Amino acid sequence: MKGIDHIGIAVNSIDNALPLYTNIFQMSHVKTEMVESQKVKVAFINANNTKIELLEPISEDSTIQKFLNKKGEGIHHIAFKTEDIYGELENLERTGVQLIDKEPRIGAGGALVAFIHPKGTFGVLYELCQKQ
Ligand code: ZN
Image (cartoon, rainbow, N blue to C red; front, side, top):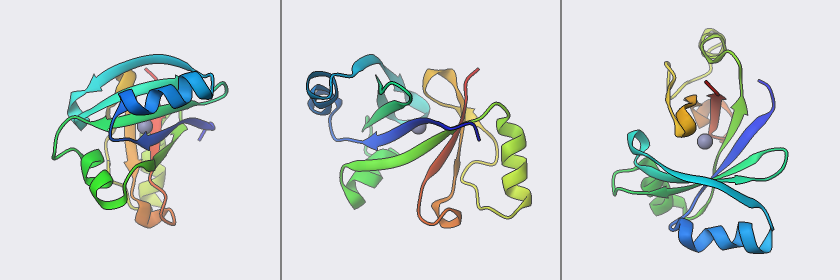
């Protein structure tokens, strides 16, 4: 793993949450995009040496909506940078770490992403993220 690519934060409304980051924390809003495959709207914020990813559900059956219903707004996941997502997944699987995604899928920004199950990571939802 090559450090932290971003921190994912679940919010009810990006419009409501964004001014905290841009006006008060003085960070820049890079872009907002829809990730239809995960039924979320995603806003990227440049936090200098990492990024913050605000996640707003766009559907009732979005996993982010389920998270909000259960736990409320807050930190959803931490994403590690990798340059070899297939190798990392193979390694994790071989060592018995439970995965949510055995194969990478296309996430925000066209990156290859895969999630590790929090059961295997002491309660943290980790994402592996490889920029194309
Ligand atoms: Zn993420």
